[in-house]
Image 1 (cartoon, helix red, strand yellow):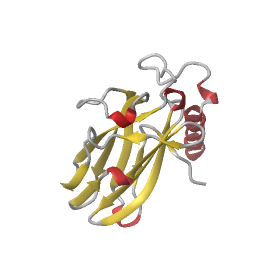
Image 2 (cartoon, one colour):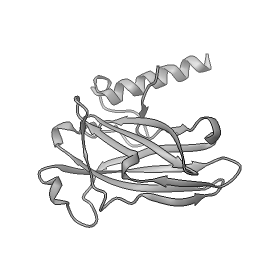
Image 3 (cartoon, helix red, strand yellow):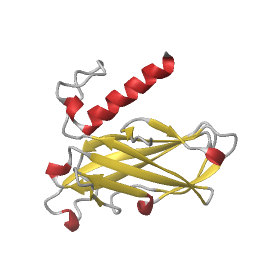
Amino acid sequence: MRVPNVIGDWQECADEYAGLRVRVYGLEKAEPPHGRDDAAEGLIYFRFRVTLENRMGGAVGIHLEDGQVDVRTGPDGESAFLDWRNSQFIEGFDLYPLRRVTAVLYAAAPESCLNLVDIQVQVKADEEWADRYLWSGDMTVPHGLPGTGTRFDGVAESLAGQIGVFLREEAERGRG
């Protein structure tokens, strides 16, 4: 069964790109640096980061553009507005071993849909497509007290809470 990652988790690519890791994190409400796009009228802006890390033996050419990122929100998976003008993509960057590269992306969606945000990323490495990976998060839930790693009550009912519980249970089974 394929299970989405929780926002913040690393995912290692498979096969010929084993050692290339991808992470979606930093999901938060934020206004774009170059002003709002007219197409986002009435929507709430948010940003997130996509970081790639090279743990392979050699350099790899990384490409991450707007067509390689799909953002869906709400229970029906409606497409979010991806603001390509304000986003910082990765275009033809040679990523050397033990280095990272980060894209900062801005999107917008109705506030009522921010309780479920799915971000799917498919990286292009050396002109070849790597696998697609999905991350899920909830922007409406507080993350608990700083340093505790816990969330407030009621999170287990959200998709992000359910995914977090599932991943913790799987990790515990793997240790046993």
